[in-house]
Length: 368
Length: 127
Image (cartoon, each protein chain N blue to C red):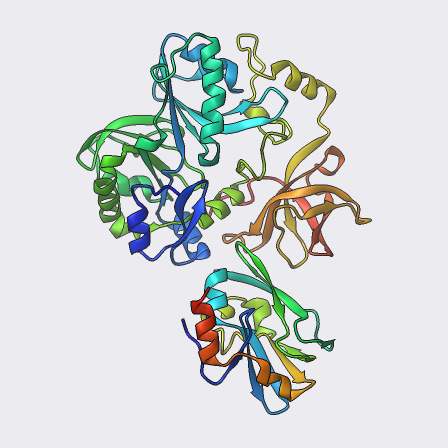
């Protein structure tokens, strides 16, 4: 199992540690609910060094990325970040990723920890077909890159103290290289997985100690706290953000998953599964990922059956929890299209009991 | 880890406190700390006779769900209604305000088969 450059800090803080995607990661410190509310109200720090970083460079970089991702990479400009996904050639999803345009010939892809190897094999296979050189044009920097997500309404205000470059006025999903906590060339982006604003910071492993300490010192007056993966999951779920392995995977279509907004069927862009997905769109979707709230007492969990009123299984819960912000049970799951309209009544089989649920609009959490 | 000397314990991390003909049942400090934030306690067995080892209800934490098992045979006579609104009492005070049910014992001698504090401590240290 791998440690991140921050593992020693988590252990010293008394975090509950668990293996996640091959990394020794903090699940919680003081408790999921308290940590969740810290991020909603002030500022919290996540070690997300387990995420993968893959660089794509050279004159063919744009062509490669246009082909292997669903979003329109040509819309990016230097300093812009894009959410996207990589279709798998069978109508499913290899991974959902972030694409950073550094220059017209240099892009940073941020991928899920559990998928680093699969993504690397997938990307290099298509890069080789374009004659790109592995190691130069496509480079896996995952093991040498550490990452922190500083999230919450006070995150940017706190982090502004560590840099002379202006970050408070950065637009959502943009990035800057800046001198941060005295270290040059730190990449900071206004991205995240919580819905509460803030930034993510990428750094070489050697800078990790200095930056961790500086971040907590700068955030002290704002009540900054470390946040575990437990709260990361409840925060993203309140926003209806998909988690790869739960809500999307190699068998789910981006359109079914509600990722049509990052699937661009423009004439100037050819990509893997374009025809297949276009046909799926024309034919009409058979099922959709929906958000639901339980009306009865109980908590939906991954893999619990979703049923109709007669108790017949019509789908499956892909994510579920008690929402710490709203204090109601919430979940995501796939249902046949006729059950996907807002207000539809569905039932969740919670260990043998059919509990009533209602399909609702995402996000569950709409801000304070 | 808090383990009280005057209680009896199970390997499933329930505790039982005999008070006359009745006994209170809850989960241990170890169990609540392993589960994390508890958000819902589901007990719908009030009035039922249950055998030792049978599930009397379940506890939902943010990330997990666990069954609660009868430490001994008996009848469920009362559910701690405070838990309906404040399930986190199981985290805050597992041996006090966070008791889960009161039961009447079928056979008081069954208590002797349970772990005492010292044995329970040895047991959780071995986990």
